[in-house]
Structures are given as C-alpha cells and as structure tokens.
Amino acid sequence: MIDFYTAPTPNGHKVSCTLEAMKLKYETHVVNLMENEQKKPEFLAISPNGRIPAIVDRDADNLPIFESGAIMIYLAEKTGKLMPTDLNEKAKVLQAARLADELEPWNCCVRGQYGPGGTQANPLAGYRQEPGVEANSTTETYVAMKLFIDNWRWQGVPFYVRTGKRLAKRLSEVVLTFREAPVHLFDAATGGPTANQLILRIQPDEGAEFRFEVKSPGSGMRSRPIDMEFSYDESFGEPSDEGYVRLLADAMLSDPTLFTRADEVEAAWRLYTPLLELIEDSPWQLPIQPYESRTWGPAAADALLARDGLLWRRP
Image 1 (cartoon, rainbow, N blue to C red):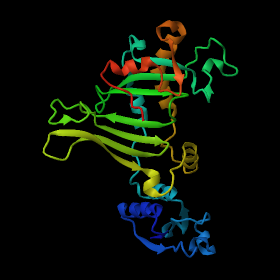
Image 2 (cartoon, rainbow, N blue to C red):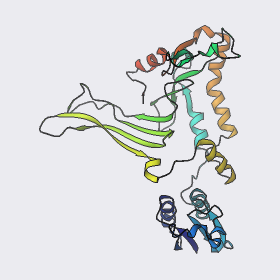
Image 3 (cartoon, rainbow, N blue to C red):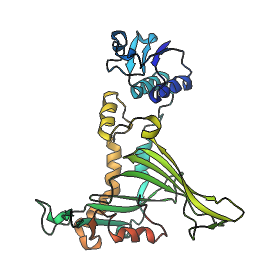
Image 4 (tube, one colour):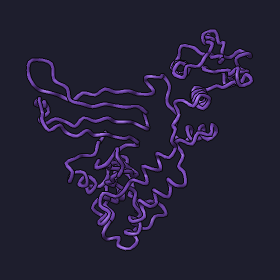
C-alpha cells in the first residue's frame, strides 16, 4: 500500500495517473495548500522541500519519496512498467547511421563560420575577430549534414541535422516533415500546399506543434495551413527543467536514459571520422562557408536541402 499526498495541481495529477496506470493500491491524502499544510512538520518529515506530491511506500519500510519525477521513476522501477526495456536502442540507431554520400562526403556536409553581423547600434564581431582567434582560422562554428539510418524503421528516410553558433535564435527542436501526397484534393490558398509537419521543441519552451493543411470553410475547395500547439509551461503552469538540472537529477536517481554510453560514443566517432580525415587531408573539398552573425547559416546549407526540394525551418 502507498500513501499518496497530493493536491489538485498538474504535478499531483501526473503521479495519480502513474499510480492508476500501474494498478497500484494507494490511499490519497489531500494536502490543503491554501492552509499551508505542506509546511507543517508532519508533512515536512515526508517531503523536506514542502511541496506536493509525495508518497510513503508502506511495503518498503515506510520509505518516503518526494518530487513528481522521482516518484514516477521509483514506481516504474518498483513495478517494471513504463520504463524502457531495451537501453541499447540509442546505440543501435547510431550504429545504423551513415553519411548520405560516403564516397564523396562533401556532397552531404556543409561547414560554416560566422562573420560580422548585428545592427549598427549593436554590431557583432565575426569569429576571426574574437579575442584569441587566429585571423585565418578555419575552425567551424556551423555544421549541416544529410544522413541515413539503415534500419527497418527509417530505411530510405533522409535525416538533415544542423547545429551552429551565433544563429538567428537559440533553440533545439526536431521537425518531422511528412511526404507530399501524390494527389491534391484542394487548392491551397497560399498558392501551393505546405508540407504537414510535427515539430518537437526541446528547448526553450518545451512542447510540440502539429502544422497541417485543412479545408477552408465554405463551398470552395481550398485549403490553408493551421497549427495545433502544446506548451509544457502553459499546460502545467511551471517551466520544465533546464538541461543540466535534469541531468544532475537523473544522475542522483541513477537514471541513465539521457546519458551517452561508451558504445554510443564509439558509434558517433565512426560516423564522423571520415569527415575529420577529409578536413585534415583535403580541406579544400569541404571549405569553410561564411555566414552573417544572427542568421540561419551559410547559403550552402540551404542548397543542401534545395537539392531535395526542401527548406530548413526558420521559426
């Protein structure tokens, strides 16, 4: 039996859903936040930070657990449910990854370096003008690549990745672009149908967005794009943990999900080593492409996608 201390808040709902999904026996104790019951000594003995939710596992010598994430991981480990059963999947994906053109990798990779930019009121120096950087430095500050993952799930699906410094925005996201239908039933109001996309925002503003074409109201046969959006902050009333906060918490909870194992590191090096050797031996085949500070990268990166009839997303 588990004693469950909670209140009608999003974090409390997360744990109650977990308990129900795992079909665990529990007894609910409602904590009145308006009366500051979470600050009383008897509750602080269970949850020292004075916050809900918290549980006491009677079957584990009255073990107290607090913080919703810690509770959910504890319950998952206790029951063996809702936890990944195969921790090798990340390594398998990296081991199956390859450059889109292994014989001529310069056709599927772009290196860039930011130059001066900004505004007249707030000018920004280029990388070579930064303190301690050589005037003819060829260190890249931007990389874009086209990859394939040779497994049954992703066979033949191109993956485009890019990362860089001094870009137009600081963000991390995954964009799934759906293939265009062979037949269009509607005329797009914007001149041509836009690709349906599922956008997973990692940081900042963790959440998701689904962008797709729908038929416009009325008797006509025209469509227009709309967005359906989920924001973690707006839905749960509190911001999600920043990257290192989450990693430190996972380390204390012995949760290895977000950490990189040795075989994953080796698989990544196997993927990138041919590029590093090319840069070392024949740098002219993969030259540095300049781009202005606070833009989305060099024009060569746009050309990489344009060859496949695609565009980078610019949020």
